[in-house]
Length: 330
Image 1 (tube, rainbow, N blue to C red):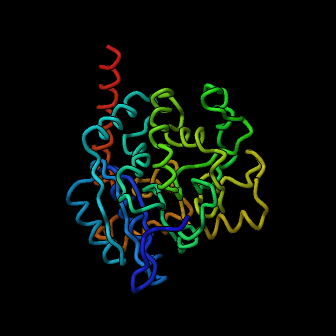
Image 2: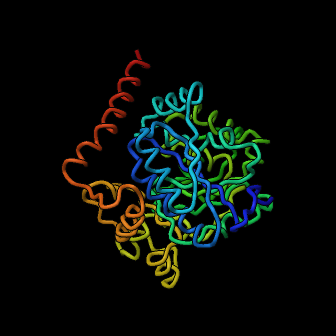
C-alpha cells in the first residue's frame, strides 16, 4: 500500500504525527522542527499532525512558526468530547503515571484525514537526524505497523503480557518479540477497516493496569503483524548501557552497536530526566538543543526558575489523576 499524500512540485509530502500536552511542548517543538528540516533537505515537505491534549495557545503559535521556518506545516487535532473523556478515563484507571496524551496515538485513525492511508508517528521526546523518506516509502506488504524491537532490558514484557491476558481472546506467546511504540509507521487504512484502535481501547479498558498501556495493547493485538525495522530508527537511551557486563549481553554486533550509539536515525530521549529538565546527561542531548535552537525557543536552557515553573503543569496533572482515582473508588 502506498502513501496517499501527494507529491508537490518541490518533492514528496510526508505525513508525521505526534501527541502532546503542555508538559511536552518543548519536546514537541524540537521534534517537529527536526523532522520538517530533514524532509526539507530532500526537497520535500512534512505535514505535522499534532494530537493536541492541552498545548497552550502561545506554544501552538510558536511551534507553527518554527515548523513553517523548517519548510513544514502543523495541523492541530484537538481532543474533545467523548475522545477526551476516554483518554482521561484510561489515564485515571491506570496505576501507571502516564497522562492522557500517552494514549492519544490510538486516536490517529479517527482524527487524521480519511484520505491519508499511512502516517509516521513519533513520540514528542525524539529528534530526527536522518531522512525519513525510506520509512514513508516502504510498502506494508501485509504488515500493519513498522516498529523497533524493544531492548532486551524490557524486564520480560512479552512473558508478562502472555501470562496476563486471556489467551482465547488475545492469543499471545511469551516467545513473541516485544516492540517499542515511540516510533511507528501505521497502516491507517487497515487500522480503520479492522477497527484496530477501537480494539486497543477495549483491551485497555479490560486491562487498565498494564505496565506500558498503549504499547502493551498494540503488542497484544499486532505482534505478529508488525515488521521490526532497523533499531537506528528508534535509538532508546538504554542502548548506552551496552556493553556493560553487569547487564544482559548486547544483542548487537560491535559494529552495529557502534552505529546505533553514534549515528542513529532518530534519537529517543526515553527515561528521565528529559533534555528540557535539569540534570539530563544523555550522550546526545546536544542534538536536542541543536533542534531547539531553530525554534522560537532559541537560547532556552533549563534553570532553577523555568524548571520549577515547568513542573507545575505536571504536578497539577498528577494531583488531578490521584483525586480522580480516589473519587472513582468511593
